[in-house]
Image 1 (cartoon, rainbow, N blue to C red):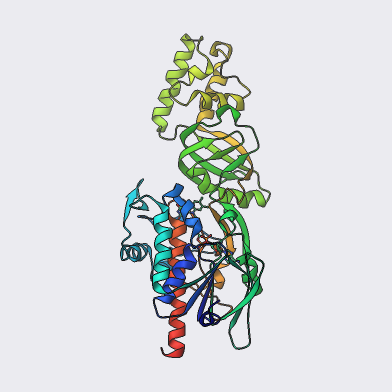
Image 2 (image 1 turned 180 degrees about the vertical axis):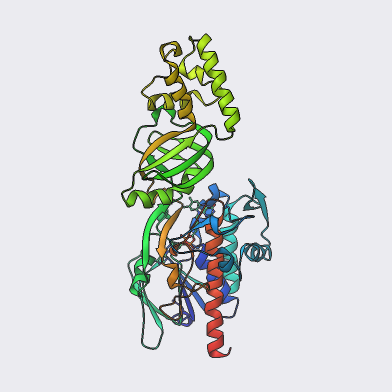
Length: 427
Ligand SMILES: Cc1cc2nc3c(=O)[nH]c(=O)nc-3n(C[C@H](O)[C@H](O)[C@H](O)COP(=O)(O)OP(=O)(O)OC[C@H]3O[C@@H](n4cnc5c(N)ncnc54)[C@H](O)[C@@H]3O)c2cc1C
């Protein structure tokens, strides 16, 4: 470790999206900054984001894009450094963006490595020192208000580092293979912070029953999450069936809340409408037409009876829920059963048994209680301690919201730490 970095003014634990932005913001204000990163390089997780394309932000951002157990005020949070500032920050370094799929923003190269490489380059240019391959095991504050960080490197060697300002940006528990294994929560707890229960979010949802009949089928649907019969959330879009789970963006958006209500012991269900675009009028006309057809065309199978409404494998899944077989001739089924079959296509209930693990999740619901952190991401309990990114109790929807939250929060935290040092020393 270089001597001048044994006592950096700012130390950042975790060089992901939030931590790297934080370090750059401090360093650009002339502050001596060190990042302690467990991986061999900065921002490794970013390479996996957006299916390798990095959906960094979104044209549309408001409170409804974020979830927290406290009220998260997006206007307030993004006021001093928001989406446009983030995109301008990258544009100032030659990185351009384009918008896709109704608002999602990606680097114009459509390569996530553009963003991770840019962060690495900018950090270097700004003079940030990176202690890679080193994990922080613990941190404490002494009577002079200085922080001590205990680290261990990949070879098991231990060392300590002292700093005036400490930023903890260790991420959550999602995708632990990328380095975010949740150790940051323990470090924060030692400073007296409350950790709201952490749960996997933006993951698949596991059903109590087999979905084999429709495995690998994708379709557009509307999905409602019910907990003990009460509607908790509602999403629309493309979903995919696996043998015991359902994935796709609408389901992922509901997964954090499903994990929470399942944990409380509520009976959780997904109520799926397989033809959400049909108006009530069109649907009642369609029901009438199909029932009239059934009266004269009893040779149709149940799957053929649903032809054009849903994929035959979805018809088979729905039939199975009513203990029917998709190959049955409809002449052998009475009209009440046929009507029930059609209505179930619009209101199909699947009981849930769990959600995907942290290994499969894209983010973490829960984390450091927002009530204990200022809008500049400083701890309200310990002066000079900051948190940003997924470690906080905020999880965003799919669509670039998590990276925006992490990077903007990181930048604000780094700038705020630097500001406070400059005010103190009059530099
Ligand atoms: C597959 C996948 C796809 C995703 N796609 C998108 C997307 O397209 N858009 C979007 O907005 N979000 C996406 N996300 C979510 C987004 O990547 C995260 O929310 C975001 O990276 C969080 O940033 P962070 O800096 O808080 O944490 P992280 O990016 O997880 O960084 C934390 C860093 O801290 C390091 N660290 C942890 N503990 C220690 C320690 N004790 N000592 C030293 N270092 C430590 C880790 O190695 C890691 O580098 C995706 C996530 C995944 C897993």
